[in-house]
Amino acid sequence: MNDALSALLESFESHLGDPNDESSTFSFTRSAALDRAEQFPNDICRQLNSWGLQRYYVPARLGGELTTFEAPFHLIRAVARRDLTVAIGHGKTFLGGVCAWIVDPTEQIESLARKVIEGHPVSWGLTERDHGSDLLAGEVRAEEQAGGYRITGEKWLINNATRGQISTVLARSAPLGGARGFDVFLVDKDRLPGAAYHCLPKVRTHGIRGADISGIRFDGAKVDSGCRIGAPGQGLETVLKSLQLTRTLCSALSLGAGEHALRLAVRFARERTLYGKQLRQLPRARRVLLDAYADHLLGEALALVGTRSIHALTDEMSVTSAVVKYLVPSRTDAMIDSLARFLGARSQLLDVFAEGQFQKAQRDHRIVGIFDGNSLVNLNALINEFPTIARKSEPGADDPALDDLFNLGRHSPAFDAARLSLVSRGGSSILRELSRSVGRLTRLASTGPALAPVAVLAQRVLAQTGALLSEMAAHRPARGKVPPRSFQIAREFSLCFAASAAIGLWLANHERAQAGPAGVLWRDAHWLRAALSRVLAGLGVPVEPGPDCDQALLHALVGQDDEGWSLSLAPHRVAEGTVS
Image 1 (tube, rainbow, N blue to C red):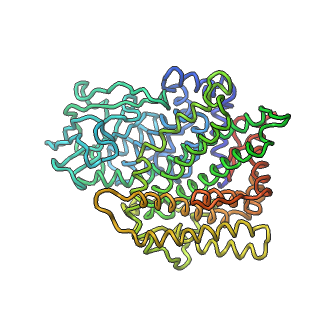
Image 2: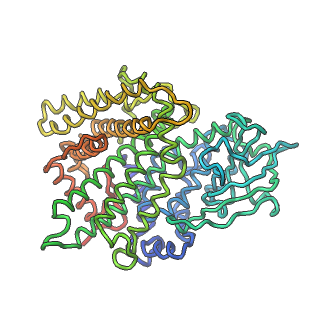
Image 3: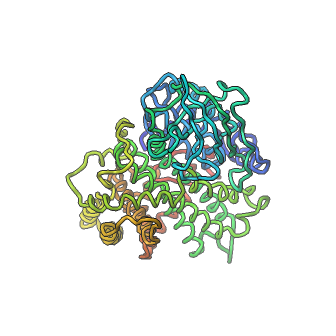
């Protein structure tokens, strides 16, 4: 992480205050109370607005502060580690506005940007009660008339549908629908008569109980022609391209929730004793913590590379976003579940340990894998790209874009929305780089014996990837039901992709990062060794990281928690400060 981002995050943390301070607006105690009451966190969202978080949802060319997607990624992650309900409730405005940011600006889009900056919430009206993720089946209609459109129909299970002043609504603009039969419209409630819409009741949910998960029904709502986003008939394409950005940044929600759960587990392991020892000193308990930390760092590496890919490898985001959106939430769910077993009954009790924060984080996070395309949707998207990925898997000439991608000290190139593509014609540069990265790592190990274990793991991942690519090359699109094995190939491909991202990240940053607050993780590639061990375990090739690696990870995990750093490969100071 560059210095400017670190300073931004520390300013944000300072503004929010210590979440352990019960008098703080954004405290763990307050979040727990709001969750029990199923109330929206209005005061907390006002605090976020007073700092200016919403400005990072709007591109700089439209008056906001968004110049790199790393900024909202890190900021939303910081909110999510305190309370996922708040992150989802406030961050939905970012998701709701994205469709407007990737097309040519209009007067209405500029107005939307101003309203977001002022703090008005925005919702994204995509899904419908009977169709879920099948956007092509949408029945909300936009009938063209003189000077505009009349929108009729219901959008349901929409975050901020009631609170949001403005909705970006996907509607069928051609009677038969189809790929060119939908458009996206900006619908401002303030410009509609009361009879033109009504908000549906809040839906009670298992997690994110305070969020505004509801719906809205339009009854001939009239909007001007200028409220259409993009050219006629491009609504579905605009949505699908926007999802490449939102799916990637959803990883920030998972990393924040995962960090919260992991901190609680470390606290439990510090406070709990068995057989006269702290729980973290017992081998089996330590294994759970270290595997969870390794999974967290692997997810972070993938998410960082995925977010920077928005700028550096924009035309490959159809692949990258699907990998990130599938792998990070699913592995975070599994990680939190493993920590729940570690905590035992205390993970579910409200008044015994940490005010029930753990069970709230576990409940809340379940939703992340579902919205903006569930796991099967993202795996299916990868399956459709198998032929190109396999055909374009041989490494070519050095790609300077990969230098910008992996080096966290470099500023990402400017985002060019015109480069977004529904499919990646070039396959995956990140996966293609794996063989070259493993070669570099192996050469480093030849002169640095401490790197020999991680080089062996990387070579095993490369061998697994080669076999997988051969299977992908032989894959043929299936008519009707997709074979189960295709989904398993997509899962394994995602792990290999994550491994390549992690190796590339270590190679590009290890020399500089060894002197930083996470130096023990970067020296001798300890975090990479642990992450690759987790990848191989997921591929059915279980290996042990080794006692020296375990010791380094435990030192880093406990140290970051004790000394007031985020649990991260590139940590920043958090508001809790140093634990006494």
